[in-house]
Length: 429
Image (cartoon, rainbow, N blue to C red; front, side):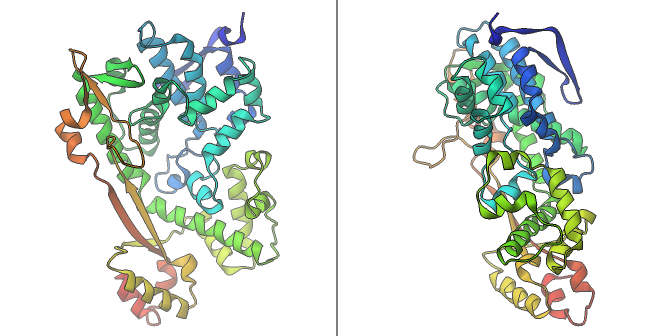
């Protein structure tokens, strides 16, 4: 029997709080889960610093990746199987891409990527195509199979229907993380009727569409996503932790460039500081490594690195105020001067952070970024774009919401109210 068609002697299941069970029958999937590159995802949190705001948010990218795989498995085995628009030969490719789509994420992903100018998608591709255990498993199917998996994840694969399963405005990736993140943060916003969505999902040429009768379930999903972004993903306390994390990494890099002699040498960071990260270096990084260094750096001589690490480890976060960059730039300039005067470095202790989200949009000719719309399928076979049929979705379609906060160390300022009187007034403390 060909490796691609090989089944396990007995189905394996993972008990899962979101999907109840995750089912694995294919030998390829079981072997991929066992690779060291996939197991590394156990040591990378799905929600980065969110655990400092919602204490239950300790789940990993390993959990999420299995969840995305399970949703795609249900779609291709239960919903699409036997339909003329679906090519069953794409089944295993879809499952592998779903399982491996987040393989290249690093510790505290987005903050880490910004500081060191990295892209997790490039590392996902490098792991799939490089000298790795994952590549060895995929190559057993065929020599070009790793390349196909990488193309699906990169959204360049020829069959756009396969791509849309894990990358579209309503895909298995989003359907899993909304529910999973809601479960582990203990909120109700991310819950929607996925069973109904799967029932009304249909393959159609180069995209997934939804029966018109399921429009309300899709509306519910869109609103769940909207609420999760503003209540969870952009939570100001989580962003405070991200600001501090980012500043720790900036400070450590700056000290290294200045020739500072670390008490605890940042061995795992050298290639990051130099901008020459190899795949081997990258795969050694996880959140346990970062937290180890942050704990060690609490003992450093440099007062800024020492303080920032202590704040992160012990959750002594920055406070924040609402901030309008367009109108309050003079206030920010004045605060910077006052911080300098008070011996508080504004580069590390006075930070504007912005969050922005577009809950739903459809493709408009001439725009830089193509956004494939969600289509509803009428009984007569006609496709209608979602916001043309739903008043709820139309009300938020194309509307970008942006939020700005100014972060600062209230404890340092309030330590001496008399000396910092003008700062306190400007920040309205």
